[in-house]
Length: 380
Image 1 (cartoon, rainbow, N blue to C red):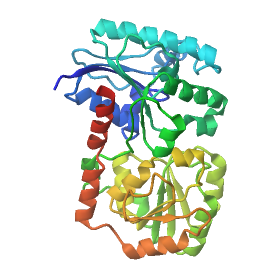
Image 2 (tube, one colour; image 1 turned 90 degrees about the horizontal axis):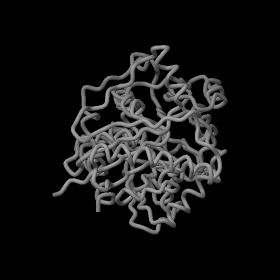
Image 3 (cartoon, rainbow, N blue to C red; image 1 turned 30 degrees about the horizontal axis):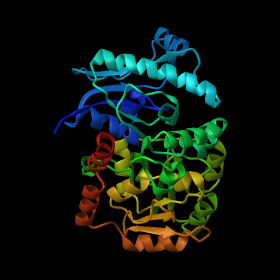
Image 4 (tube, helix red, strand yellow; image 1 turned 180 degrees about the vertical axis):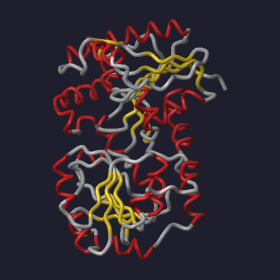
């Protein structure tokens, strides 16, 4: 097997984010690229960073970024510019990513990379950069950026980027069928959902101390707290299981949703936990839930939390979304507009997943296997 040189670029996140989180798709993929025998030289590129902000950060001596591994023909590069955010509009985005591309071309040449394969999570780079110095380009689509409310000012540009990268024959690896259809690639493509690292889902389990006194049943939701959460479903579950505890853990993306949650007497909203504590928390839950609204955003997602719930061996109840179907027989699906309560009752009766079944789930859904599929597409 001949190793190929690779260039990998982040989009919104960067190397420090990936190291600190270590659970989102780009975080996992970059670690695999650093250690895979099918990868020769490797250039990892952060998105543009604002030079003034970076200088101020260094002057104020904030926490140091995690170190990048020192290896032959491996480098982390951070292109700089004055502004913090991408501009709006196809023309200026083209000029922006032509400059970004020149920077990466120079660094790849300095590393001695030979017509490297490019794997990028940035649709603007995949669509608008020349990339005539590189080998095949693969866009790794792990979210539909044109469906995120926080990125609304760029929605038209994302639509243009999707259309352009399709027209120019960029390969596409998407986490769901819906997201792949959204892009409509004309080149080689694959659907590769999210996964898990089996070793992270083994005992000993470490649950947070605050969980122990909460009355059962403990019904758990883990994930970003924003408008995709179906509050009507949460209220109904809260009222029906009034003697139990509904636990919501994750970063706050919408403070209004948090206000609605905390108004319910048996709902406990907690701050994000470390990945090891998340595993212990899920394992200690009686049932895990994903009551999401069905919309363009949620239909494009491969919900990582579903794979994690199952990795912890918990019974699961989730909104019936295309990417959730077929993940596991232990996931009970609730059609849009239907009550979550009967399914939660049934899930509680089901109890935990047998250990042999849980082990099989971990083996079938490992990130290692997922990344082999991505490399099969990108390196071919």
